[in-house]
Image (cartoon, rainbow, N blue to C red):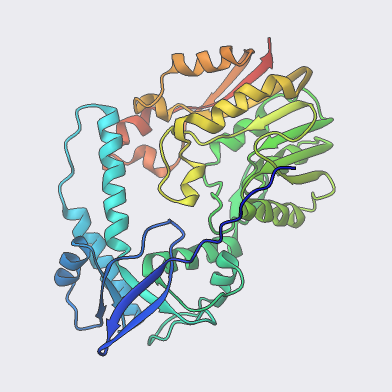
Length: 380
């Protein structure tokens, strides 16, 4: 058995000077952003214009004023970012790259408003909300005080509400409760495809990259006797288990930690990989961005070996990447052929999410042309 060296990583630290004394705290960032090197104390006297200039230059603002005023300041910064003119794009791929650059710059600037959070997950500011439950859900048990961006705190609060209230899934006739960092199934058109496609068998199905567990639940609800749902992410595994328990489906759905496929073969294997072959900038974006189409290629290349005779693999994939110039249809068809697969049929649907009809979206042309497809594949 090989010996592996274990390297204990030191938590990132952030330092600042306050009241003439140097202070240090653990830096918390789910997006993996580095701790700001320049930090100044800020409060309600700071104007939005000055804050915007400082944040744009890379100076972080550790807030000591009223919490609600900090939220208003963040909104003011966002408005100033939106006023900046966009780069003119001549091609769809340029539009995508400029959009990603703008998103990254926006995240960096808005991430410069910081809060100090105590060891008990409390915020010592006037009118600050109670974020203890939201922090426990996202981070787990506290390991001590830390400094975090206000933007991340607002994300924690929003995620807690999503988890508490759930997302209505019409195809399922029930609600799914996403965890922080687990992509919410808000685009129902791909679930409708899974609900309508003819099942090759009701004996067994694999759900690859289950996330919230919504596809596994839908397959079980359609009468599949046993579903094995896999994922690599600890939050996704816990989220799927809880959702399936809520739906009283744990006796028919087994949730396993695995990189793509479980052991064995199945007559039906379903995968909804990230649709865009690009590098994610945060953990949750791994549900959208798939560097070099890693998960797509992994699913296709391993599918034939895990299908039973006459079995089907269902690939649920948007063609948005094709309209953005990031992948061609010919490249996708070549991936399928090279994996020893053939196409039985394809079922298409148009997206119904609001951005598909938003002419102000920089990617509107591609989104308006987008089609989501369920590819029914079989081994050649």
